[in-house]
Amino acid sequence: MKKALLGLLVSFIAIHTYAGTEMNYAIADSAKAKKTKEAKPKKDDKKTDAKPATQTTQTSSSSSSASTNNSKYQLPFKTWALTVNGSFTNPYTDLKYRRFLGVSQPKNEFQWGVGLSAVHMLDGAFGIMATFNAGALQGVADSNMDDRLTWNAMRAAGVNPGGDFFKANFYEGSFNLYWDISNTIFGINRLIRGQNSGKGYKPRWVSIYAYGGLGYNSTTTHVYKLNTGQLDTTKLNGYQVFHDGGVNSLVVPVGFGVKFKLSKTIDLGIENSYHFTFTDLLDGFEYAHINNKKRDDFYSMTGVTLTIKLGTRKRDKEHIEWRNPIEGVYARLDRLDKRVDNLYKDTDGDGVSDVFDKDNNTPEGVKVYGDGTSVDSDNDGVPDYKDVEPFSDPGAKVDENGKSIDSDGDGVPDSRDLEPNTPKGNYVDNQGRSLDNRFATKDDLKNLSNGHGGFFFPSIYFEYNQANIDSQYEPELQSIAKTLRENQGLVIKVIGYCDQRGTIPYNDDLGMRRAKKVIDYMVRVYGFPAASFEAVSVGNRTTEKAEHWINRRVDFAAKK
Image 1 (cartoon, one colour):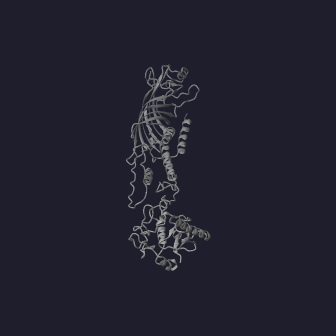
Image 2 (cartoon, rainbow, N blue to C red):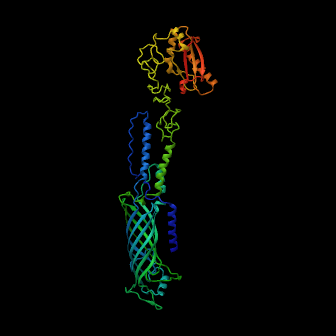
């Protein structure tokens, strides 16, 4: 029996080493977790086009981050507990009726016992326990014993024919390994179900535990005759049959109990323990039994416990024994899963994770920057997919469609208009200045140096690798149409340009397609004869400057 008990202690230590430590910084479950205040978003004076959904995502993200950070610095749980118990004792000795629970007649084999123990939990499952017990033991043997064979053998060994009984007082101190079974075996499935259902893990109010260890027992024993009550001093073969006085021995206590949580400070429980000594003199009678094998005595203590859970103000109000150590792991895994899910989640499918996406409502197919906001090539505040003029002049004021504002309606945006208050109907040059004769005459145009000079035709701009005319350039084309109507017989050269990218042959063709597209438009919409225009392509052989958009255009010049 003692070898089995020592093996059990070694198993406890092995389990503790394998299980690892969750320590008292384990994270409480969602049902009991402390409420954390969400960080208030900082005020930002800058105007943005962020949508409500974007703001919600950012707030949620910051709140989740704040919650995670707070949980790392949560107060540690209580780890100390002080327990008192009141028990009845039952001896398992030679001088005892061979019944499991003993008898109350002719002598009461149920005596009193008290105990005091202190437990320091190393984590939610295992702890170190120091225990002190004291109490009384009493057992009786007479002809009414269940086993007549044993009784006859005991009489032959010197027990009084009328029966004997012993009385003993004991004191015991021990150190034990404490094991909270509920936190290592039970409740894990309930924890998983709670996590999967989203309802969280409901805190336990019942806890099952066990302990075992090694201690020292000091017992004072006296044996009396049952019929007279006098001390039995019988001698057999010259030797005293019964030991009278003190007996000291090592003891292996093994206990099992159930606790009920009354509050965060107090537990009430029921406990049963067996105390295995290394002596057969606990009852004062050393007996070799029928098989000539000596059996060491032991006793049990069964009673009620009252536990007070201790901790300073710097500790959480909850005791760590009431927190499953796996619970903290699951809580961390849940947070990790959510953070990974958020990292991969892309609500608007723009290729930018919601964690970093400042605009979660980007339309499908729209090009975005690394922060998820739509590309705005000219930085006018209107994303390219909404911008009818994606290459507005730097700093130009634009309307909600991204078109440069033209306050006086002269066809020249305010950003380039040197005469911002041109009277309505006046013809202007490309800088918005009124022309003297409202429009260029045929003679004026013929006298211009290289078809240019003081009067300038407007330009039409194109998207990359495109020849389609954007509707925003209708005013420019209309002004050219007016000039042609007022100058019958005038021939205008339509010159196509391309940016520097691509080969020369390809860009010569693209420039020609742009020029012809404009001519086709003028013929179809305004009814001019095709002979009024001459298509010319410069391609990418002549560039104005490094910006690509400036070179993707069609210019107009009066043919001499």
